[in-house]
Length: 466
Image (cartoon, rainbow, N blue to C red):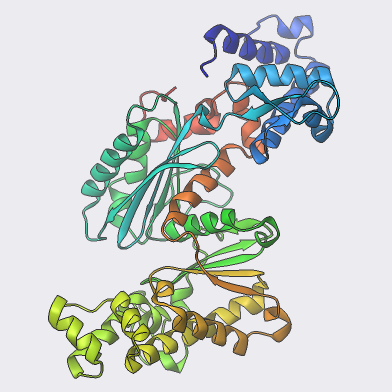
């Protein structure tokens, strides 16, 4: 529902005048007195509280909001009128009657704006459009190669984003982008263009800045595994969300770590690089791309497993893989998983050995962090129960019994949708964080936030998209 421009203007003007903004005589008239400033702060805080109550739950009656927010009837009525003028809430359906007239329900308008989301890993690019409730309106996936030049990556992302927006009339508020590497950003920086140390060509091409410039909205950039982690978190019951480890069993073997309900990115955003943990003598003397010897990814990453399968096919150690190689010219992790399910002894042993190595390294994290949940995703996790059972064996054998006694270790239920779902969840958590929300709610759009304006200025955006 589109709100009349005059109604929005009145709401904004009222909030500004309360603090004396735009009024040259405010100081002389006492409009900017400490009492009025405190009143403005209280008004903003109550607006934030009501909006986030509605965002987090089901539609509620005004009486329910009064009780939960601990605000009086007149205050709730006034704040809802402001939020309604901004198009963020509306009052429609009716609730259950407990005697007398059934109460009207107020709901958060998730359709008020859109978020563009993308998640790129070493093999796939996923793009989607989400509403303010984090629901994916559409999602699209296609093959991707890290060898693709950054200019082509940017061009493809722009095309897919434009296609995703289509003729949708809702305003665009933000872009959330997951990239196939760790992202480095200054400690405490909420909104800033990160440094992509593992993707220097993308850094040099200023890919994130150019996307912000192209669409005129702020962009949040995190690693793909962090996006996937947040997607898995959102899918878990509330009691299991606080302490969790997500493991992406791909070529790199990366983890997302959730502690006390918050994603732990590390000081520079580089936390979770499990594939570069020393795997012991079982890793042999294989040199990793990082320059170290014996990293877990060199023996249990998907590239390493596929290479072992290829060598076995050529040496005749696996009849199934030899036939696959003859027919397709390649051996993949999926082929190895299929062969193991058909009873191929070599492939079953290969997956079991890799799983035990992953589990042994994970046991160290389990001992240190004491998570309630471990979610296994990525290509290797989809090969079947052999690898999953071996990972569990490694964890239970090497983790302290009290720590591992109640831990749940499961395969991802969202699959590749986890990345897009997490990208939406992460950026919405930033946009609606109480301290950030207070600074843009009086304008009705996060594009008016000072930090957003500064970010767009850094990207040389001529004008923000309204």
